[in-house]
Image (tube, rainbow, N blue to C red):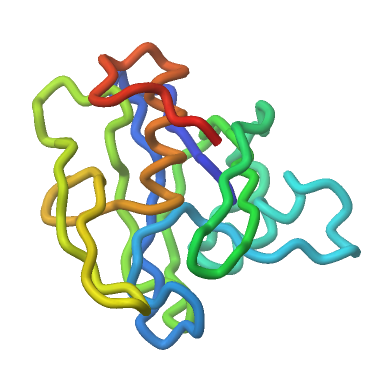
Length: 168
């Protein structure tokens, strides 16, 4: 997954997407661009760049890879997600691949306007509804592994913690 941050804004916006509702795993959920590693990719950061280009049209030369954030296990699918942190070098217009992504938006990691809020919501999992913590931003509820990645990135940036630093 690519945690693409725009350093030109003091709020350090992070590129997010809503997965297509036709996807087999995690349909309609909010996520960072990215996907499964292929042996031909080489290092994980190459996978993140390839998948980001496929899903949202992120040009490889628009990203300066900086390193990796903590890996997060996705409870439902068992995937282990390793976010690649990258800085946006050049602006681009996202081109959504409809089979992969329904929308994209920039979420402020350092929210100065109060538009990003931590709250509890009920979500329906395989074993029924359950209350989960997550971030609400402009009507988008971001929870689960993506919420834990946001927690980690915000903690690393010194954002006032809404809850203790996540243990991975």
